[in-house]
Image (cartoon, rainbow, N blue to C red; front, side):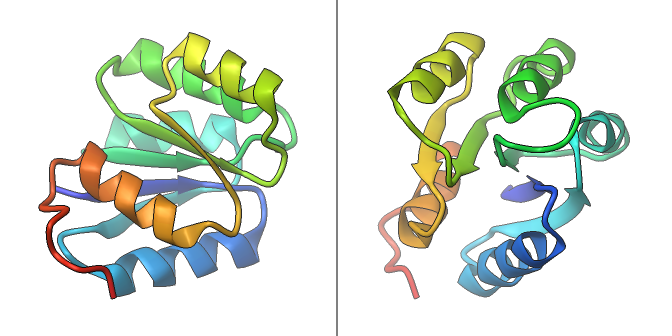
Amino acid sequence: MGKTLIVDDEDDMRLLLQLTIDDADHGLHVVGQAANGEEALTIQRELDIDVIVLDHQMPGMTGIQTAEALLVEEPDVPIVLYTAHLDSRVAAEAQRVGVRRCIKKGDIRSLITALRELTGLDVGDPLP
């Protein structure tokens, strides 16, 4: 468990997230990356994904539009919206479409905790 798909239009952010998630270990590992919603849909169809980390502001489909499309394909996949542009309106819309967690970019500890919880990994282990 813990097979993670990262969806973010910024190359540096995808790399940072991959390094952080893979370094956190505890069963989490990145199995795919996408730069936009269209790529995310393609990768989701090709790979077995346990959880998705999704940016909100991206060219083309927004994170919420992407989440909605991903959940049509696989309704049970947990999605974490990880965005710098988090406000009550975005959080409410994300919850409405089925996003499980909304976390402001920079709160990496909460992101790792959420990924572990959503994938059923032992959250009793201390975080690095």
